[in-house]
Length: 94
Image (cartoon, rainbow, N blue to C red; front, top):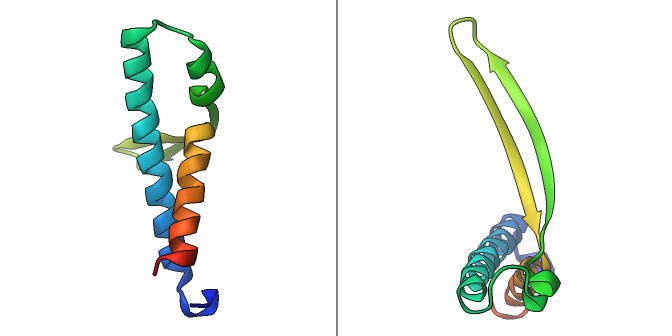
């Protein structure tokens, strides 16, 4: 099946889901490694050290109320693997 027949919204949802699933798996792996080996092991430094990209903070002042929020994106090697698995699924599975 060609990529022309697949909507871009499916690609975005699949890649986002793959990256979120990989982050959940990465954090579970981090907890297991902290339990077994301790903090700052070689595996944790190689695979699970993340790069943080903050976006914000944004403040909305509504005279009576004020909202402030910030979005942070965390990327590591496991997240990249989730991205590649999502791309593979999108490209070849359906």
